[in-house]
Image (cartoon, rainbow, N blue to C red; front, side, top):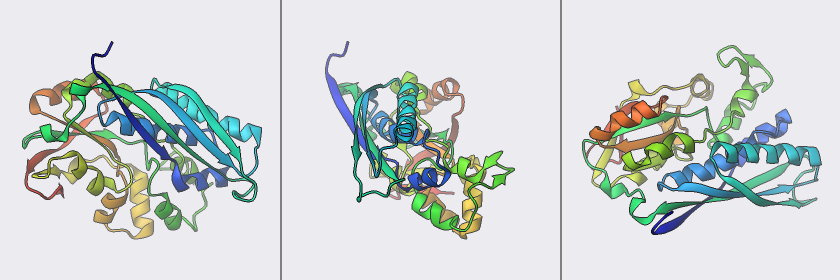
Length: 283
């Protein structure tokens, strides 16, 4: 049904968040992370994810563990209306420890050529809409693990209503179902992953514009406060590394912003686009 279809692809892994899964011996959510990191990136071009493939490398093939991993991949594909069309499992003794593994994958999506999101369409006065994250997502875990190195991951934390480990393993939120219905109202999208606000937002803006973000409007989950306090990390550095509760930002004209906010119930305004070559300004 497309006149001039363009294929868009994205690839990623889960990173050192897997170390948390190993310690907790819980493997049914990291597959969601793997899918999310790929399909959310594809979505940033305005594309609809079509299919996904995974690659799992293990030190030793424990069928129940691999089945748990793949169940997460399947769930991620369900959440993104994306077909899981295949994958590869490699057993690599001596390369990976017996109880460890790595997972990566890629997704391919499609978009009409004239509907590809183009940051050059962004103008001063456009509004910035935040979509909440589900937690830390799947980046910054080398720092997370360093900060919590002496913490018991099995400790129940009342603020979370679960253990620290369970909170950290909360899978990356997939935004496909929320965003695709309003994609025609959006000018630009940033998926807030590695590099936090400072690296991901400027790349979806023209060079002569800046994203002005109001810190008081950001709804930051308790896990980030705990990371900041325990690790004695400056607030500015937190925004350099983590999503701080905003997993994706949408940029739209004031005329279209209300329609997006009404359609995507969890979304909220967090700033606006202004003139200036600073890239991003937190205030």
